[in-house]
Amino acid sequence: MSVKTPTLTQLPAWKALEDHYQKTRNLHLRTLFAEDPERGKRLTLEAEGIYLDYSKNRLTDETIKLLLSLAESVGLRERIDAMFRGDKINVTEKRAVLHTALRATKDQKIIVDGQDVVPEVHEVLDRMADFSQRVRSGEWKGFTGKRIRNVVNIGIGGSDLGPAMAYEALKHYSDRNMTCRFVSNVDGTDFAEAVIDLDPEDTLFIVSSKTFTTIETLTNARSARDWLLRTLKDDKAVAKHFVAVSTNATEVEKFGIDTQNMFGFWDWVGGRYSYDSAIGLSLMIAIGPENFRQMLAGFHSMDEHFRTTPFERNLPVLLALIGVWYNNFFGAETVAILPYDQYLNRLSAYLQQLDMESNGKHVDLNGNVVNYQTGPIIWGQPGTNGQHAFYQLIHQGTKLIPCDFIGFCQTLNPLKPHHDLLMANFLAQTEALAFGKTSAEVAADGVPDFQIPHRTFEGNHPTNTILASRLTPEALGKIIALYEHKVFVQGTIWNINSFDQWGVELGKVLANRIIPELESAQEPKLSHDSSTNTLIQRYRQLRNAE
Ligand code: G6Q
Image (tube, rainbow, N blue to C red):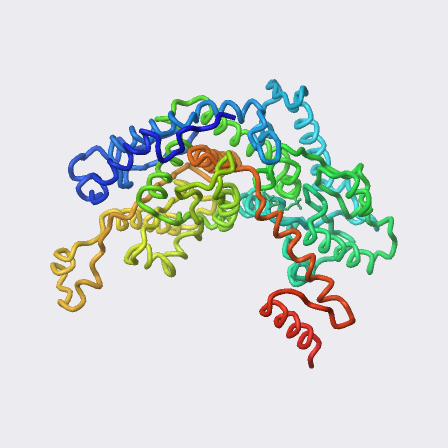
């Protein structure tokens, strides 16, 4: 790990960007487009079937040049090589970061602690494929001999959001004779509603937990076991209705799941980077092994693009640099992810974890508190729904919100005239955000004077447009890898560890002190602050009230 001295904000490349920002901050996209009629063609990039139009950003060729030189001066090339090589770049946990190995081809060699991990990855994938086929074909039967019709993944965070997002995204490719559900919240409502109409005899639970110690997941898994045994009344049924995905065989066994029915992964796969490992088992059962492999091929092609392409033509690098430009120079605090595809309705929730858990850090790799902004707040919803809700603030509020618009040229549900309407909105929004509507234009429409300021649109709101042909498993893999690497590039620039999550670990222990205080029959002796004490007492008094 190279220690960066001087710190980021003292680098000449950073200072040059600061100067450049002062000179260009008021440039309007209207001017930039007027001055360069080719801008919308020029500031684009196509790779691996993904087209990125970054022309509607508040930047010039000089901005890109300076951002690229920032990437060079923080040693990005060296960090990319270190990650792909399996160096232990997750320094606080002393781990390699090798989600890219999960989609490596059989002929690759990736050595961790003296061992090539690629054969193990493929062995697990083959076992997953075999199991998925047996479930899908009906060969794997429930305890009473019925074929499995329902798959319920129990997991949380990285062991939930990925498969849940991808299942929704690839529902078109799923076996519609099966249902697939995801239970994550420790709120019993989540479990209760997920199984309300299911029959235990044809339901398979996949307990997904890297550590197999996460309280939410284990509580849900125990409730699932009770629910199953209430009907099937024989402990032996568990083996037919429960499988586990974990790195912790001891805990899996303790829970009562046969380790024969356990699918492993490795400590070099972070939770939020894990859905293309065995954590994706529910997804593989839903869409089938072949589609899952297509998705991995998509991931891999974006990995190779990222690893080998010069930075100026490198999709994740460019997206990351543009993000840094707004985050660190314009002071933008959030980024909106706006997919124009209903199947991607969980994408922003997924990217929220990927980005915010990775880059929500305030100390650098050397443990020093940073004096610059790190990861942005990620949020969003599919268009066109968001247009009828929060776009108002993006168009006319006081905040700068860079947006990623993601769309597809072909629909999977060709129901005329929907797709053209959807895409007309997709295109119209980025156009309106960039160019707005001047007061003169509003007046020319005959709008009464008192309304003119209210109906004027400043414009100059930056967007990236990401366009692909069709939402296939492969395209999904490419899009997710694009964002994974974008997050990594930004983390590299900010010199932070994008691969630990001590804030999440804290959450896992915080409640432990209060649980016995809520559960005890005796009035507990409380020693929290006065607010927490009073709330605990109030909860204890009211929870059983009529
Ligand atoms: C992801 C995080 C976190 C984790 C969950 C579930 O990067 O570490 O979201 O995935 O807390 O953890 P387990 O898989 O160990 O249950």
